[in-house]
Amino acid sequence: MSVPEDEDSLTQRWPRASKFLLSGCAATVAELATFPLDLTKTRLQMQGEAALARLGDSARESAPYRGMVRTALGIVQEEGFLKLWQGVTPAIYRHVVYSGGRMVTYEHLREVVFGKNEDEHYPLWKSVIGGMMAGVIGQFLANPTDLVKVQMQMEGKRKLEGKPLRFRGVHHAFAKILAEGGIRGLWAGWVPNIQRAALVNMGDLTTYDTVKHYLVLNTPLEDNIMTHGLSSLCSGLVASILGTPADVIKSRIMNQPRDKQGRPLGHWCSGLLMKKSES
Image (cartoon, rainbow, N blue to C red):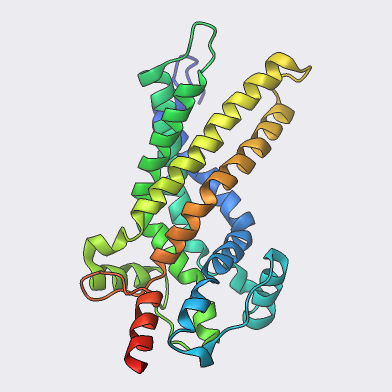
């Protein structure tokens, strides 16, 4: 049975939903490929907590990670190769929500709210504002999945340090955090998280549009895969530089133990209290 020629396609009927689904699928594939890098990044970001922990318990000092490659090799040797993907399930959940939400929001802001100039160029200032707003909205929605991802990424290190594991799986992690801290607990660390997202999207989306526009107008390159690839490399570099400081703060806040009211019990607080009591 033939399909009528005038029948609208899926993307024409539901453009926002289609972009959300496509962004989520692309993010899932990218997350599976790059997750070991994300895991080593998180382990390196948490490393500074060891110095704070020594204030209270110097006997449990763990060997420091040194560089991305040595960190990855250490995880493989001490925990196993598959542990490089520990926490990948909530990371996929996070990217589906975050990537889909930010792209739909950014497209809506660009096409409906701000609009392009008469020459079909999207001005830099509009890209900056639109990118930051899209990142904030997408990351706020995805914060619970980001929280679970960070905590599950640290489970392997807790096991090596002789500490009890906190979760049996992804759904147990969500249920436990919700039971101990309530809805508020699922949004622990959301302030530095959305700050990071705003900076990353400002660097990512704005740099991508700007570099692509520059290459098309000022070089022999056309609007093809080469241009998109170069623009993506530049935008990724800028986004990483801008977002890393807030990302470190976010990861440390999310990994803090919390009381029954969902309030953080930071490692530095417990360490300082133990030091004072000993003196």
